[in-house]
Length: 141
Image 1 (tube, rainbow, N blue to C red):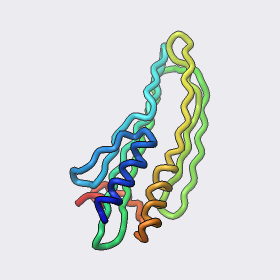
Image 2: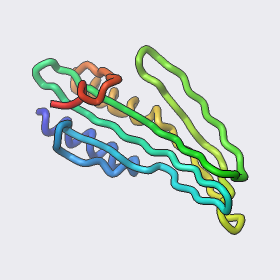
Image 3: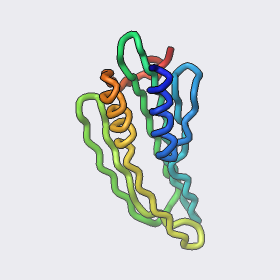
Image 4: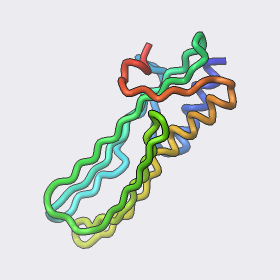
């Protein structure tokens, strides 16, 4: 059963364009760059990582998530971000427009909160609990 659940989560993350990896210290890990925009005099990047552990014995799916945003230099564009916290789960939506080199417009829109909602939904489907954790080690074997 664990393998089926891990595969279901893997396929969901893959369908979201997150390039998940199976195995290692966690059942699934993601480490990807959502945005890498370079401008004439400024740069902006958004990195996302997670670790998912399906614990059959405890009947829990553990999720660790981290986002890191970097901006440097002077850049043109606009951005907005909305976030809310429900319990320990932080839902975050970032979107905006970045004006890159030669006036190239880069639109970005990421609902990062949708990732944890999808994994929680899979947990509920299989009658498992869902827990977000603040330390990566808590989502590792």
